[in-house]
Length: 152
Image (tube, rainbow, N blue to C red):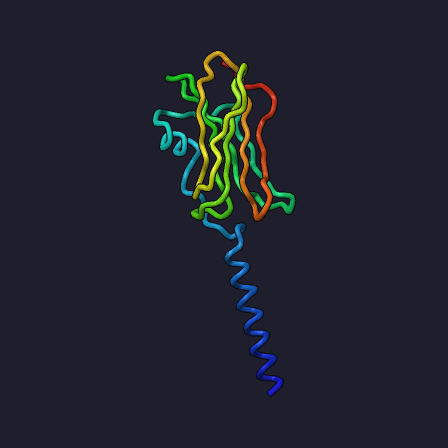
């Protein structure tokens, strides 16, 4: 009888560990969007990756939780910042994209989204900073460029 009880307990424990492991944010699907697609979906237009316009967002445990990109539309003079999730992809969880145009304040698109957050601002003849955040379990992980760049 003890062997049967022990086997049942081990089976339940194994199933629980497997369920928790498979459900963890680190085991999420690949994000189906690129930064250019995110900016185009939200704002239309043709977007190019800006030089020095990418940062990986990594948690303290080493898990890559997302990427933040700075995009530019030369036809309109707008910059778009897109933060793409790498964890909990397809589930509505916290994600944020922020941009600061020289002479202005930080502005954000922040919410519970399935794939990305994106924001745009006019930046013709001005420099920009950008940031992205992804909620990983209970803490926000962030990355970005917090010095002026991509001027013009």
